[in-house]
Image (cartoon, rainbow, N blue to C red):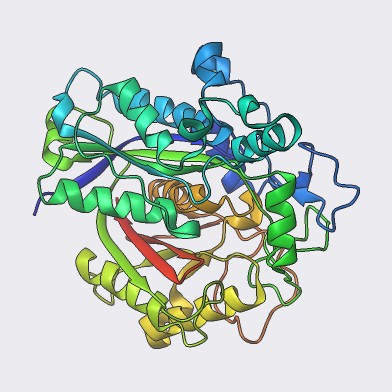
Length: 407
């Protein structure tokens, strides 16, 4: 089995549009949630979200290219450009051995909405010929492959909130088993729009508190739903010996991946958390986990009543009495829930925690929940000696994914 390193990172997020700003704000507990600016929320029950701020597509692409991309694809391209430049891999790899595994939970919803309006208001001739290639969820991966001439395996993943965790995990296995030497992997989402907010609100998934600093409060007794976020996060995964030989900067090594399904409910997690627990167990087994290994766990931690309770149950099923020794945090307390981009964003948080030997906080935590009684790193980052970092994502449809990283 070949080892797999992370040699490049790129990110656009509600708390920073590059790695340096994301890193600083993550560890300082900066909240990226605020009142929605993308549309008028007067008639909406939910008025807050975690928007990307100050994004300029011209930094990464020309105007004609940007016009041919939905915002989720622009975000993905920007993060991929950052990651590839950071990795220094361009010009060092055969194009047939470079792949792209970039997904989106929803895809081009802004394009879908605007083209629907054109159809209803002006008839079929008003619909753009670019509607389909701008809207489909796989197009971010396609655009990135074209940009970097990545002619190896190209596999967009769509598993709702688990999308980019699964994309990275599948890319890890593809390199490990020899199907590619490097893969650009991650996810992107841009779904802060009236239709999305209305849909999530009416399914009772979103927090209706409308207080930016106390709405995404994972594991807190007051939690009442998640706060939607947006952005993109991309990792360059590369065969370890190859990366080492070319002198690449190595952020960490990916050593485990679990993929399971609850097979229980279209939105709710299984109350006994068997699927989530099995996902974590599979990743730990592949990583060679032993009880003496010190663990940081980046929780899915959406701030919904059912998710946080079920995830706590999962951790107790996995670690038993040692669950209280695991360092846990939910960075969604700062970024909101970035949907298809969440898993990759949290994978980056894991790599930073390993590098810094510092646990990012779960901000906004005030009231303990008797059903959530583990160490969630409330409000302030803490220094800690950790050997292994886990990131778990739990998606609608019962999709569970876990990634394991080590220094």
